[in-house]
Length: 244
Ligand code: PEP
Image (cartoon, rainbow, N blue to C red; front, side, top):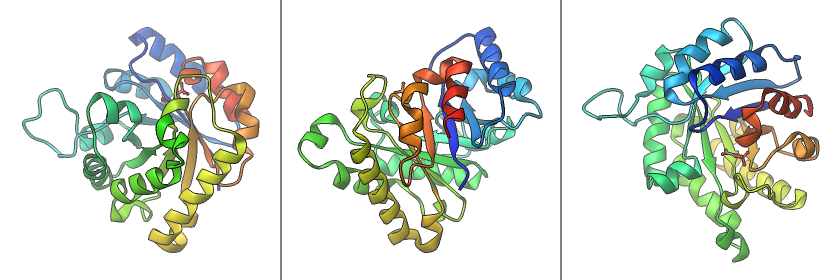
């Protein structure tokens, strides 16, 4: 399966820097991976213009569960599709913590994404306390059961395993722990979706950098990466993509 390297730009950048970053990514050397960038909502349209006919896909970082309505400040999945987005990150740990998003909320948003023709990238991951308590795999299995809609596998949905304690900290789980979690996620996907679950991409996210990407991306059932900080520098993001 072709790996996916996805950049989550979070709430960073200006219009100019977003255009420059998109241009740098789009003009990068082709790698063996699919590339995806997820700018803030307000930068989606200009970044779509920069990406133009390049092979770099566009995604958003969230969407509302409703297709339209009285939801001040929110953005719907059809609006994102209309701008040229093909993917949407859902259930990122910062959404779960900043906005109290539960698995049920993430599930509803993922349904909305599928209905709009977007590919959801559903994030799951344990806290440090949960890992220390030996609960990491059970927590992630519960998040998968609660957050993935029925049509997820048929639509080629993406799962991103992002241990909360590894995001933006420079810390990563051991290679053994990443491999064990990805094997567990694969087993959960196959148990739920059958053969289709074996073909879904499972990304690792949490302090992926050019220096550790090769080792992480070589692990079984690691089908790409969701990258935060290092996706804000085109050379670093492309360096990760070249490590595939
Ligand atoms: C993320 O926020 O999805 C992420 C993985 O961030 P970082 O790469 O900075 O840890």
